[in-house]
Length: 259
Length: 317
Image (cartoon, rainbow over all chains, first blue to last red):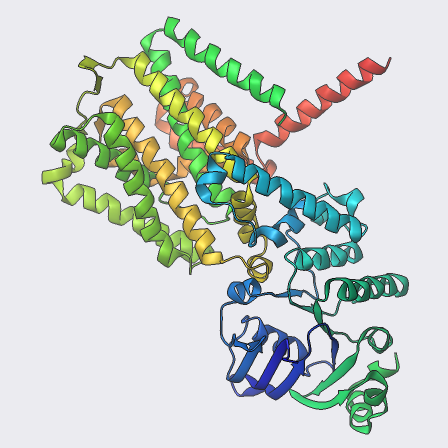
């Protein structure tokens, strides 16, 4: 089977620093892949390079065998790669409904003229988008807050909104940057359950960055471990956990692995 | 807004338009000017209040609209209902011309770039005096329909209808995908891009839309006043537009209308202290920025909510 996402010797440099060095990996369609590593391992930078948020120094990124290296962020997103943010990045003055509607925006086929003159095509597209957004809000238990501005809501709840917003356009690949950071234990468990159900239901491929090993063991099919910009191990959760290089990398810097 | 509200507004508007027939020509003229200001404010507010792009050259696009429509009418003899739309389109294109490089700039750099644009337009008008009349200004050909010269009241009707159309179209836009995307660019460009939205395309459309409306306002102003000169479209006019939207409420369609109407009435009250009017404008701008940064519209909505609350309480007892 062709991989959904393939990285070929991907490297990112910031000045003299090699943030990501020759990272190669393949993720199969429908797979849930964990990406772990100590702080500064280059995980978020790798995601940023895939989405075009930081320039690729060398190497290539393929989505379903289409080369997407160096495309602008919005173009990558339109091809079917969405992401969530570690710090959510809500549209703070807009309601949750409007936030999720914006997740759908690029798939809405409404011309400027149709919107300006309130044509039937624009009205029905808007109505359909609102229905879809309500369905998503319901699935993430956000319906009571649909008309509340994001700025007035707590962080854990906005994390769920971020997920709903990213999934609105039915992406092929969803990259989640620390989906449970800032959540309580029970919130994290619920979020993981939801993510797993969702992946099974919609067939979306997941690439999940996570510090919390317990969460990762429960969620991922397989795990890639990075340290200092390089891939140092890859395998099933139990294989990775027993890998001496991984233990070394974690214990050498901090004891996140034992958390 | 519910459909009953819309009906009330539409009926109120029509009654006002009709009632104005009984007024003298000076109040009709003032009301026309106020509605031109509303069109300009609506245009600027979508760019600055919604899309978050500061512009100090809104009056330059008014100038482009005013001069284009005037020159087209004067040289080619085309009627105002052709020349004003042409001025509108040309101003929109000029907005694209400025917007293309400006989409790469932010904050203070964008402010400086738009100030530079304002200077370029001012100097161009002043230096091309053989065409534009330079600093001495230009008389606008008398507008007529079917050979009858337009007096103040028909002009008022034309401006009123244009203003209503602008408000309707722009409310539609701001409530649609387009308006949400403008807001998204202001609130988090980072997230907007991740949602598949092209920041530069959205900024460019905001610049063009805003400039086109300024162009329309300029064309209508030339029609109404009958005379244009570069001073009308200088930096103090741009500052006045910014004051409209700050006083009314940034990013709010109702705010644009409210701010422009209230401040258009102001010069009438300031006549005894006319020399200080620029100073008073700036004082108002600063006072609102400090004490009521979200504008008059917030006062109005909270007042309406309270009235509604009292109504509901009365209904219960």
